[in-house]
Structures are given as C-alpha cells and as structure tokens.
Image 1 (tube, rainbow, N blue to C red):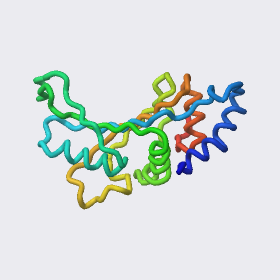
Image 2: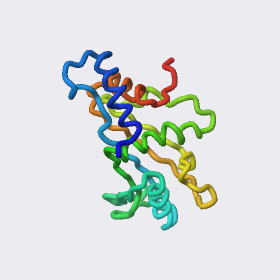
Image 3: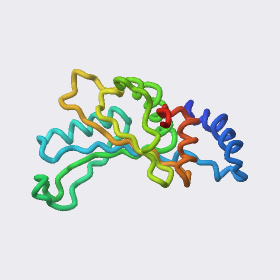
Image 4: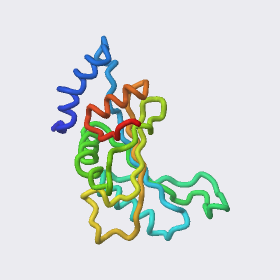
Length: 181
C-alpha cells in the first residue's frame, strides 16, 4: 500500500514542480531518493550507550540500524580502532515517505519554541541535513525508558541538482521551513 505522502507527491507536487520549473521530461522533476538517520554515540560513554541508541533508532524508524565502528585509534578522544561509535539507518520507498510524514506532522511540532527549520542547511547538491537535539520528540519513544538524551542527524537525499530545486520539492511536500531573512 502506498503512503499518503507518496500519493500527494504523484498527484500534486510533481505536476506543480513541472509547471513551475518548466521541466520537459518527467524524469527531470526532483524526488526524494532516500532518508539517512545517523545517531552518533560518544566513545567515552558506558558500553550500554550504543545499545540504547540502537533500540531508540529501531523504535523511531522501524528498521534495525547498522552499527558504525571507528576506523582508527585517536588517543585524545579516547577512541580505539573497531569501537562502536554510531548507528545509522537508510530509508527508501514507502518507509521513507512514512517517516517523512511522521517527522513533519508529529515530531517537528513537538520541539519547544519551534518556528520552522533553517532553509540554509542544503549542501550545494540538492541534499538537506537536519539536526535533532533530542530523540524524545518522536511519539514512539517512551519518556520513562530513556536513560540519556541522544541527538541525531537526518539527511534528505533528493535527485535535485540545485539547492533551490530541492527547497521547492521539500517545501511542496510539507517541510516547515522558517522564513528566509
């Protein structure tokens, strides 16, 4: 079953972008390719920190995260080679649209004093990165079971070649951008 947001993209967003940007081919119209959620864990924390991050990320996304290991030892950071330092999940297709919908409709409005996300976090190639300071904004997380606050990075990878095309895509899909100053 297709998600509500994917149907909206096909029926409303894609024709609007094609009309606005004067695309001649349907394949020129930008679309979301994937969403990558990364949760870094400090190497100096206790051993259970990575397990808690994996559990939280599994609850948020519905997918089991991949644990990233450090590539080399760095003494100043108390980091050993092969030590787990982060976990990440890549979402595609229907799961990606479901997560995007939950993020925009339920999670972002739960941020205290939320006035929109920054429109300046594009990377120059049409991808947008968003930092979330606390995992408790997601309704799937039970506040009683949280041992520590954990932030995460969410990257929206689009097929757009320019930042303004990606901005138009994300704005049309419902991303609550703050007004440009």
